[in-house]
Length: 399
Image (cartoon, rainbow, N blue to C red; front, side, top):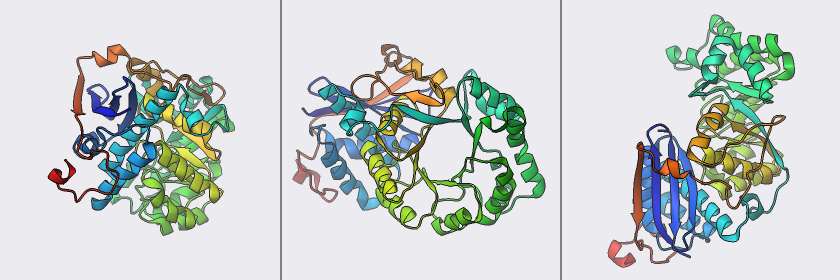
């Protein structure tokens, strides 16, 4: 089997998503996805990755990944190229699952659990306006989530105060205002709802310590991305100064960036995103590395149905899973528009997808939409089956 084309799809209605289809000469098409900063990832996919992988065997996932990574490593890999590689690699796993008629979690070695714990990130989309809801009355939102059998939620009530000082200081008045939705949740539903606080790496340590002290009486589930991950020692110091567990960081790419983080015991929980970090196999390697340190892992999941399915399969397989993040505004509003996969929560957990590979398909109606744009790279490629490092190759040498 050979890769014959790399296709990217974008819909104007969902501008954060880049869907990738990898075509093969057997007729099998694999699906992948990445999210955010799409122009760079799309250019890397078609301009850098496609010429290396066209004509190659899609079942050689590890070999192709290493070949591409060897090439993109030359100029700094942890950006657009790695996001594009992640989408491509995910599609290869989908091809393999379809080829062998097996679900992804079987290909990974089987499952350790049959249901996946989740918390809801309170983003709004379409008719499901969870973001506006926690600004209006977070207690009412918490009850709505409980009615949907969701028992943990994440909000970011302190972000708004970081802009004036560039995250260098926060006042007592601002902290009190930021505590308002948390108090509303506790007043409305008590401790039936776990609360995670997203910080979006907007603060310095002295400000985060002040925020953390104010949050401690409210039995907070975690603080996420408290500082930019380029300051691991400062984050570790914060971890030692609060009883609230710290999560970090979705911004770390590949196992190599997690190594120092784990060796230094920077945070009690790690988080990673299979759409950014290098893909499915890389996520498993990061989780395995974290497991050797006794550290649980959260799978970041704020994209489309493909990402969600990936997280379900990985969540089933990974022993040290803490949570898979999810956004009910997304899975209720548009997963079912673009794909035949529309998951729902029961008792705080998602079931596993059914079917071969990732267990979902794009709807024909999605491929016929007026707001769809496509780009296709096809042909024999430049590598000619070679798997050695090749950024220095001249085109005439490759051909």
